[in-house]
Length: 241
Image (tube, rainbow, N blue to C red):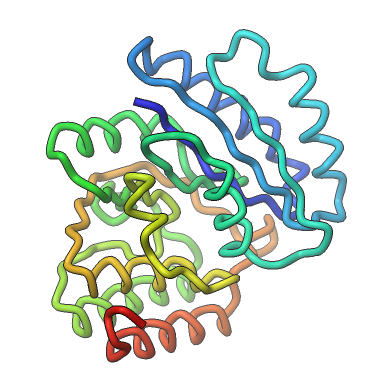
């Protein structure tokens, strides 16, 4: 199996090298049966992130077991746009989304992949709720829970964590979806499209280390409003539309 880790990056100079190092170490632990590539899309960063990425590309990947593909948007386009750019370049059988901060632990790739292969699942989400993790600031935590509840009510599912970063897909499954959202609405969009097609989503517990707005959290209240509208809009759209 080959895993492509899709990493959208915007102004994460303080964490990006550490994050890539952690992914590379997991690639070493995965064993000879699993290849890993990191597909990093710098989404128009202005804080020195591009220089950190180039430095890691030169000095950080030797012998790591993970290939590195570096791409860049000339201007900031949004998380969803960066994921789509990464998806186009990915060569793996499976893709997983990885934020560029240190909230999520790449060691959780292994149980996610094990669940995918063991159950023949096309999609597996890593659930922070099932993992019993500390909460982010309350507005963010309850906003995520409210969006998950709205999704379950609209689409008749039983997810625990719609807004988790760790979403793993068979590559052909993700590429088959008519994804259009450019920002943080990627999470509700992709999940709603999967539900409309009747594609099952399994969940496994993961670890989570939340950061605050002061530490660089980028999601704001209007992103939650766009996410809710995305769920509502897609619920009654024709499946082929």
